[in-house]
Image (cartoon, rainbow, N blue to C red):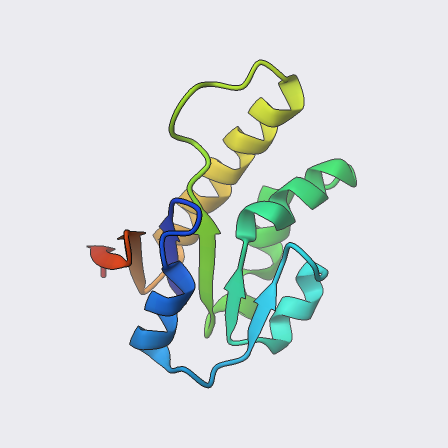
Amino acid sequence: MNFIFGGRCQGKLSYAKQQFGNDLTVCDLKYCDIDEAFKAEIIINLQDAVRSMINDGKNPMQYFIDNIDHFSDKVIIGDEIGCGVVPIDAFEREWRDETGRVYQMISAKADTVDRVWAGLGHRVNG
């Protein structure tokens, strides 16, 4: 598993394709169910899956713990949502915090972790 994170619109998907192959199938979790990601090779917008799970009353961390083996051969991409001003809205804070916890768990299990900023990748781990 390879995890790539960084700010919105910073070139994470382009970086992933450059590193792992242009012809890999992509699942965008902003538009598809998390279980559909099992069929893809690159999974983008992990933060949106966390949001959907919280909205549905599910525990995102437990989901990823229970299903981590399904992601072992994937490239997972998520937006960094934890930097900046802490949201006033309680749900937004919960989403931000839970996304950070999921990212930490995935980072600990990943073979590589890269941060992308302005299209430039920096290997954080692996």
